[in-house]
Image 1 (cartoon, rainbow, N blue to C red):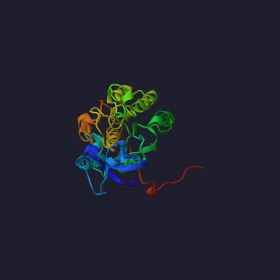
Image 2: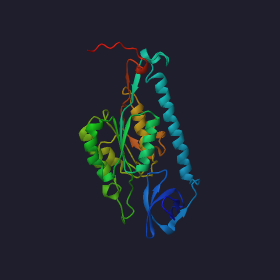
Image 3: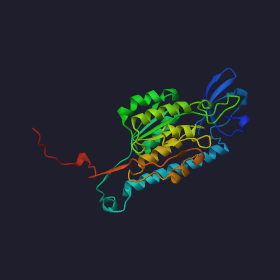
Image 4: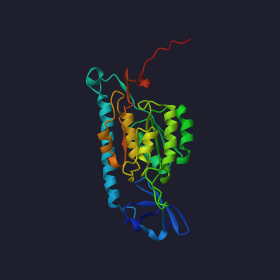
Length: 299
């Protein structure tokens, strides 16, 4: 078995596909290809699978992810064609007559996993959402936000990576942050974000990863968090929530039922509170400066 091989675990019935990240003696560190899951496993518990193989859980997640991304792109196209809240005035104009432009909310995305970060930034780019991303270890996210927030001045902050209920404990208490791998680090990062901006509508915070302490993350000040049912969440679930926040008008609240239904993991994977969007409309329509005829007037 080599680094980069795709594997499943015998002891878990081959439910999730992983990629081998590190091998030491008889142990391997493995990372979920679809889910935000980092684990260790004895080598003799791993079964190598071909690149084309897909577990039943992974296949369902892949189909749901495709549907969710299609819905996001559809929403983005509708906004671009007709504007947001098209009930009167400029919203009744045809695309050629439109005299407005859009300013989606800006996203600051901190991710404990560089591979997932790259996938996330690619999706923001496809949706034309301004975003800045940084690969930051979960334990360092609070200090990173302290430095980055005043410079980036985002509308939406995402803090995600890897988490989970610790299996090394003989017994665990789901109410106790010490039972989780990184929930306490996410809580610290959320508190920094809320110290920077206390208005939940001025700064939307999306936080957590697989099995995170949902209640503690919301209590610290997150608008949306994982995981109410302490389940695995898909790598792109936090991105979907952030994109909906960035593309929803400031005059509207994010439709909780709609946004949670369309995440890959559903309402057991993520939850949240009523929150306004951060997309703004501006006028007049931005012009192509390369075609603009201007008579210079400055001395």
